[in-house]
Image 1 (cartoon, rainbow, N blue to C red):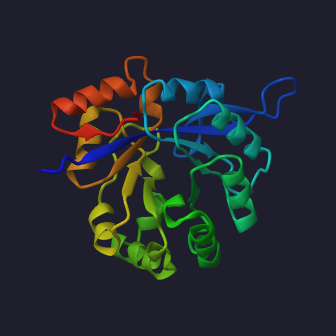
Image 2 (spheres, one colour):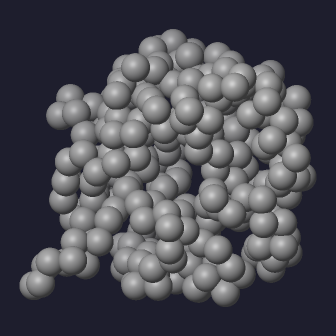
Length: 251
């Protein structure tokens, strides 16, 4: 019998400080994708998560409106202290910007607002490998007011599912609130693609994580939950193991 291993992925969100004589970026927690609390230096946060033997880390620039080329320096600095694969998101809108991120050392890039830009997606998949392309579907309660079916039909019409190496789903209305993850989307996406599905936003307990895996998610991203003093990936992994859920680790 083949043992199926799931993934727990720490997600570190950063923003510009715009403060003289201080580091250019700081790590933050968000609520509904808005800044909520500063948690410190991004590199320190990355090193802490790597020490828990995770097999992937997400680093996200919160500014989704415009690509920040200086963010590449943070990616480069992160890769210099990491031997863990790094997935990067941050308003990437062109093949040249994606190349800058890969050249800085990223293993995968996240495309969200530009997920309908098939030329961009095809360029990334062709030049860097299909496995390097993560499509992020970020939506809120407002997006589904007219019905989930209508929202999903709009998503399907964008055509990105055929190119995605991975799908990341985030209901931003749940972000940072600890009320559980919106799993209504999963079965519909699974009908359309064999790509791995990762979910996030809303986790505040191990039972929330276990629920995600019960509906056949491949991975769960964790951010606010990991800021709690009594939680770390090793403890969560051990708890899930007792429930029969096996988590991938870095050797």
